[in-house]
Image (cartoon, rainbow, N blue to C red; front, side, top):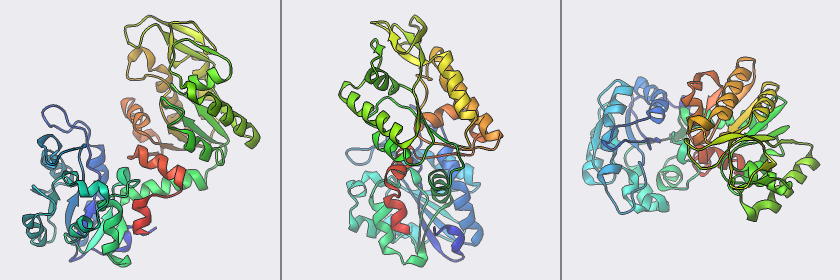
Length: 396
């Protein structure tokens, strides 16, 4: 794996693909700086070497060209503050002014280009667009793990315009790849994968891959009810993919054949409505009355989950235990997060991946109590499913 540690950036201008796709509120203020802060060590290494930097990123999903709400101009102050120097901005990424500004950068200076996705060529992986972007620097650094699963112009195609010596992965990318490799290929046993989310269909490939690696697979969240119904349980009006019942049965059979222990919730906190104000009570997960839905893990399941987690040496967590955004249905997720933090303290390697799991770890202020928090949910899942990513392959 070729990282920025293999290059001395003295006198060089680095064009860096970062992931500054951060959330903004209605007044265009950044509400979560995690992704900005994650990129800072990469930028500081280049500046310390004596290089200059051109930053490129996307923000949001602009459909019809430039829009103010998707402008990266809103985050310039945040990047400047996090980096400790004034970052300049140019309101395009391939205009003549943009090229003049990047060419005129002095050592130690940083320029942020406008949103790449204001051009449809970015997501199409257009080669000419990638070639134009490559003119902004003489070294290419990919540090955008959150978009590394996309074969876009700035994440995969641009790399072909740089020699092997002049392209590398930044620290975010390198750390992500190393953490996934550790979990998938060098996991201390027992290895437990906690897989949640709304739909079985979204997680079929990752579950099948993990069955070749994990000792335990702990199913959580809305997708658990498809498994429960497939096993003959009554789930009321809980979330269920009826067209995936046979898939769920097949997964359970494969797990049995491979000697992987599957843990399905045994009880749930059920509600008569999808609302924090709904009536709620405990129920056996196979005996949920008509008109009621499961929204969180029950106390029996919470204890079972904690026991499995605390006895594991490697843990991958992707997906919450329930609707943790609602205070009445957050306990399952909160207790799982606390158990993962305790397992980490006792020597387990713990990787948190996927937007909701990351949001949960952050909600309970446990990010510094686990081994690694991934910045890219979709990229993490695809890396596990495919074994690599376009953005990594392009540099390697």
